[in-house]
Amino acid sequence: MADASVRRRGHGEDAIYFAADKNRYIGAVSLGFGPDGKRLRRKVSGKTKQEVRDKLKAIHAELDAGLQPSAGYTVRAAVDDWLEHGLSGRSARTVQLYRDGVRPLTDRIGARPLCKLSAADVRSALAALSQQLSTRSLQIAHNCLVRAIRHAEADDLVGRNVAALVRPPAGHEGRPSKALSVEHAQRLLRAAADERHGGVLHPLHAYVVLLLTTGLRPEEARALRWDHVDLDAGTVAVWRSDRAGGDTKTPKSRRTLRLAQIAVDALRQRKVAQAADRLKAGELWHDTGLVFTTTIGTMLDQHNIRRGFRQITRAAGLGDEWVPRELRHTFVSIMSAGGVPVEEIARLAGHQQTSTTELVYRRELRPVITTGAEIMDRIFLSLDSRLSVHRSQV
Image (cartoon, rainbow, N blue to C red; front, top):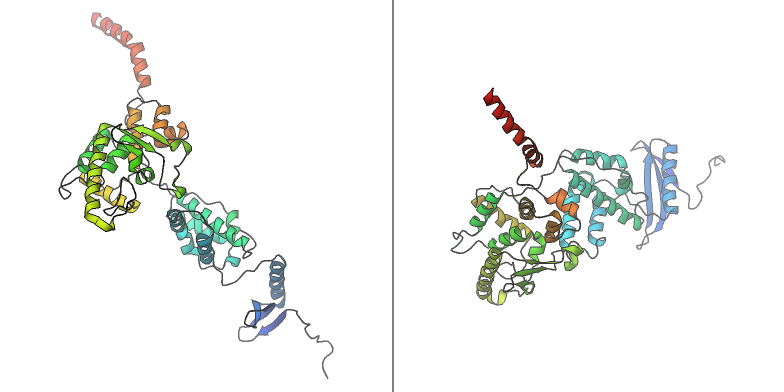
């Protein structure tokens, strides 16, 4: 006769049983049936029945909230989904920047199931990376993870964004931007004009001259078109940028600049060299209308530009630790050292605010503050002369 005290589990109730081979209690929740007709179950385990009951309650709370977490859905999968489907309208370059930025973090916690990720996991990973990455890189990695989990939240794959609860730590100090001295800038231009490169100017000669003499951003120069350059008038209109949508960084970045004669000459030489490339490429030529192109007319890749730029800096005896953006810093510094007001430098550089020019880009070529000494000399010079006369009389 059956024991009346043992109640049969009701229809739809959770199953809890002891698995001798694992020496643990197993709990299972029925999630209905899949497209193939097989029953879908979600299982948990614990050392005691009460531990299993608590885990089953948590699963039911998620189901009641409409969540559909999966133990097989990892942090890396969530990041990949965000990169693939959560960045609509962003350029491929921006997506790649985010992918590279978040990679150090996913390399550490990417295999962790998203539903089991804790704030402690994120905090620990960021702390370990703080020994390798700069503060800015840590912020980018953390921000990407927060946005990826938020994207998963919208798809009901996780109930809480634990990354948003963590504040990224400070990393090691990043590489500061530098500016060339006037002497070094002259050496750089001579190296770019060195005709040892196959009997012609270095392919980046005009690019280097333009950035150094106008302060254009590298992304503005890459997107520069010939119809925005007037060599007869000696002007360049900065209306585009290699950004999503082709817009400049700020509204004030749209500006028209007068070119130095050295820049006009370099651009004329660039036009002749590009015509030769077009003739040689024939049907392979891409008529993009860009000023700076590959040998088949396509836009220059920023990585190739950096490699070519390092060739020039090495030839100039400056080493290979310089990047094209520092030509912009050099332009601002030379203008500053030449006594140009900061408001005018900001207009030339296309800065939204003069504080950006003052605090970020200015690299004084004369770092010693001389104003105080000059005033003191004027005040006390005559006194010193009188004292000298007095001492000689004594």
